Amino acid sequence: DVPLPGAVHVKITRLQPISASCLKVGPKTAAAASRPSRNSARCRFIVDSGSSFDLVSSKYLTSSQARKKKKTAPQYLNTANGRATADEVINLRVDRLKTCKDFIVLDKCPPIISMGKRVMDEGFTFIWKAGQKPIMVSPKNEWVELDLFGYLPVLTCSSETPANSDAEDRASLVGHSA
Image (tube, rainbow, N blue to C red; front, side):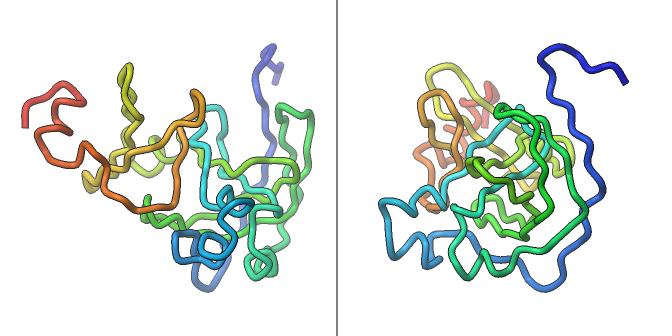
């Protein structure tokens, strides 16, 4: 394979499934409830179209979550900070997406949810119209409004109902009638 200039190339081995239940990431975790200033980032994920993987740094995990990390075969990733090797995964549940997935633990990395995985592998639809907040629609037609951090779509763990929550407003957002 010849790398394309500026492209991110990843060589990764298949992740081993983690047994037991998912670690919960949501508004009721100790991280979200106890120390809102520093730990609020623990409950905010960039929804990234440029990442093929769900990623999280240990610094965004609570101490009890960090103890649940599992070793895996080394995974080699080309990142914005250069080549990185990761050999740990953690199984996390993200309540607002009603999903439980393995996140690669990568140092010096913000919490990232792969938009491509959600859309291509899990059947989500991603909608972002000019001047409006982005929306992710689950395969069960459940709408999750994302926040913006600058120009980055961000999934927060709070579960407030989006302002555009009724069917007519949602239909107008995508250009259809309800």
